[in-house]
Length: 391
Image (cartoon, rainbow, N blue to C red):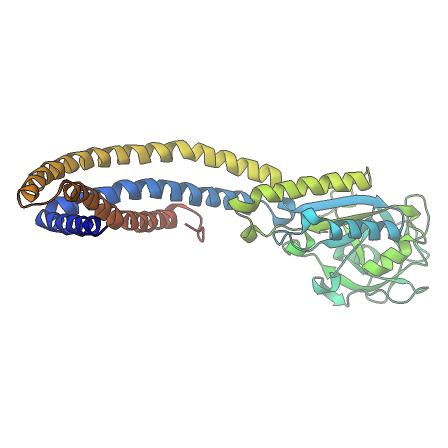
């Protein structure tokens, strides 16, 4: 054992002296090894970062609501709304922070007709409610509608179009009837006139924005009388011809989506779709996330070939130069080994001389290669990829 230890230390000493004696060749070996390994590492790092960037580009080109999850179904009672809430709340597949908490909304299946008491038919619009309405409703006049007590008129906020058509202001009474002529409760009382805010992402896919009336004077396709969510649930159990549609929207948080969890998110959305359909056949489930992830994957595969070709070409040049320098170092080492044996070095020490040289070069070059590859990839990513993409 002592002899083996002496041979090992002797071989290490000879290797260090040899490397120092031909410092030029040693530095060339380290530099070329660093370059070759660094290029390979940079190629892999760049592909990963580019994949993340392409995924984020796809997600950024779509609204968070479209990329998220929309579940919608027709309901006939508040109990059915509660069952949908329970289904989405207890689904293990949807227990992810990449999807925001669900925002529930209600709206009439068709248009209701609104008029002042005693007047003839007026404009048509949907009646709608959304949880957290008062935190996002921008008012021109009046206040946000609240639930009130049972038996009272339902409080409502109307659009500027409807207020103008019917001459409404806060405190005005409003009658609403379904397409079958059935009255909605005992009528409504206007508490506010709201300003449409389509830029607010909270509205998701339900941004009620009255469009200008056309020359024929027909009602716009998107308009709503907004009421409190709890009040509309109460009314659902009493009338409205059992024709409300409930929706639950979970917007996507792009900052929490990456290549590492995108596939799992797509699987969660697919599982949620199956569960929703199993609970009620008429449920509509929409999400653009599977399509966006697939498109990002195609983009990444299209980028893989040119990146690999560039990496292989650079590595081929570096390896050719490395072979030439390594051959020069081997020739120099042969003379050093012969001289060492003349001075009494054993065959084991001569073998360890070559082994230690390669080990020292590798130990120095590989960490440098990873550092150089990371710095180069980071610089390239800052100029070519989406800001904030991790390398």
